[in-house]
Image 1 (cartoon, helix red, strand yellow):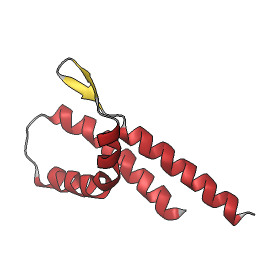
Image 2 (cartoon, helix red, strand yellow; image 1 turned 45 degrees about the vertical axis):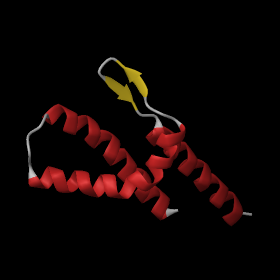
Image 3 (tube, helix red, strand yellow; image 1 turned 45 degrees about the horizontal axis):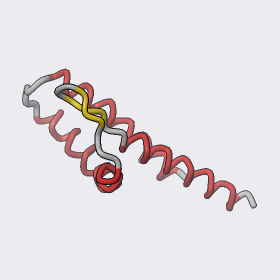
Length: 88
């Protein structure tokens, strides 16, 4: 349960970081790059397969990636299933 919660926090970190990083533009900063590398390394193995099934919604010059939302829903469902088995 704790691992799922930690992963959800990391996933939220990636979501927030993607917006913050876009706002920073192309300024290079080693600390920011390391944070991004950590977040992407931890989340991409689950996000990539979902992204292949549900492509981003293209709008103008950008797009909306729904894969983090789908992974979050799946993780919450998995948590509920585990809790129901543990409490059974």
